Image 1 (cartoon, rainbow, N blue to C red):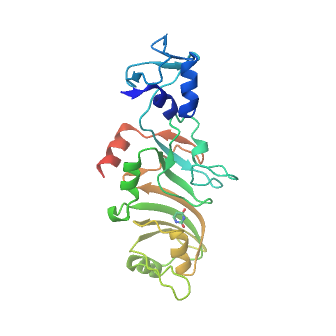
Image 2 (image 1 turned 45 degrees about the vertical axis):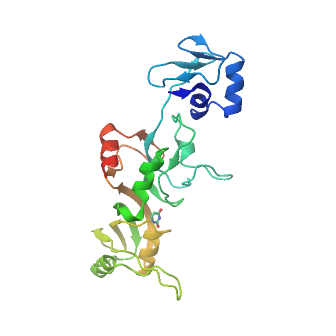
Image 3 (image 1 turned 90 degrees about the vertical axis):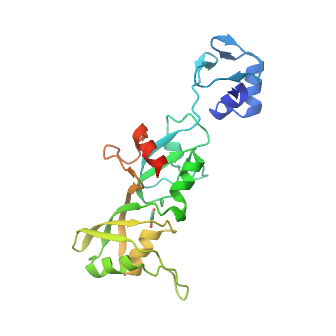
Length: 239
Ligand code: URA
């Protein structure tokens, strides 16, 4: 059970003060009857709440799989750029955030949720959750690079060394521009790009394909999203 004013504020109808005003002036109904008490307790599962006749459903948690497009930033708000949250047109909750970050020019799998516990478990370095990236690389990726990545590479600059943990590099197509899959368990700043820099190559295109048990849905074009299925969510929670 949840207070009526909190219910409406959680669903982004307004601030707590604003929704109290709507309630007191009689704009809000519960199961068809006007309710003027902000403290009234609501069962989000069974009761129907409406503001000016428009029904406002309750969701305690939301989970979306987004295929992040390039040009959008992994943040909740930004003065200049569109954020990944702006792309979730169907969202009910106002407290959604991206579970982890992808660079502005990176595409691919991003989980958007308001479940802080689940996000923390996915992102905590101690949990060693696999993240798999597809990339096109300027230059010929070699078996030697596969060996270097298997040991870990130094992505520090100048005197300052910064070694990565081992990563699994798979060459899909060799050539002047190579295609690869790289699986790592860390999430250091610009990690994939810096790992290739460390072996003298440059990432031309980067897309995240997988995070733990979650795989990017092939049917989602960049910029598209969908709710997680019950099975995807159950598997993530069991990680
Ligand atoms: N590594 C990068 O370099 N960029 C990303 O966006 C993700 C991983």
